[in-house]
Length: 307
Image 1 (cartoon, rainbow, N blue to C red):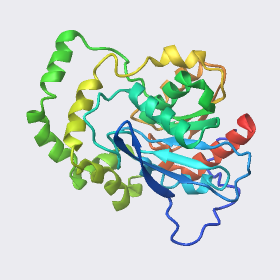
Image 2: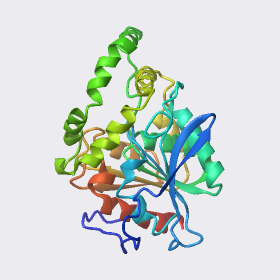
Image 3: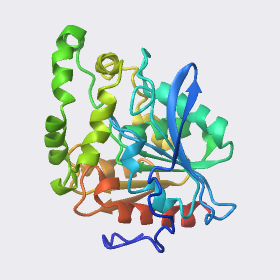
Image 4: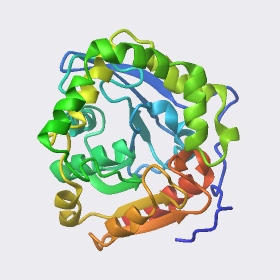
């Protein structure tokens, strides 16, 4: 796989004007919770083309794939969903853990796809994708991860966890939450994450701001602030990754400041089935900063490693 940043899709989507880039969004009831998902079934895709499931990152939604779903749907049927607690899915009083979201992904696959797919995740979505394919190997033919964070690099001592829980009080979180969800602050934070700040447009800011206004959003914020410091929040990457025998594509921006590129090299050494592709001049949000490169890399890899 070449690292040429000028790669573009072999053919651009032949879709009518004003076609929604995120496909046909629907709601699905899972365990009594409302879950938002979308799909794009392209008539150009081959009948035997493997379906792809896209999983968003922390604090985001299926809208993050605004420049990816439609182009890739020229070759594959596409599915994407908002995790419980995020995006347009229900802001539930749930015990949020990676295993819960992995169960959601598996049940979604069983309900709507029911044939081996490729699971594609970014950041937290990559961690959930890894957990899902390790737990339910029958549902997948391959795994694509756009950066993979370590949720438990070091567990703090008990006294530190107690302080974290104290500052996770709803009374203390509410003023912070009101500040965090302001579009002006969100724009400033996103401009620091993106290598090219000019990509932070009104649409992107609204993708993050809208879910934070939903009823129950503070409740989710509170519960996540507790569970993310819990040792049971996520399985350990080094326990899962070495045991996988399916093809794995690992995409990483060389300028990622959220999960530094050195982590990519360490992870690639854990499993010989991993193909590492680096993306020059891109940071943590590679799917949005270099969408043509990412789209082409995924399509080429699925064609060569899966089909």
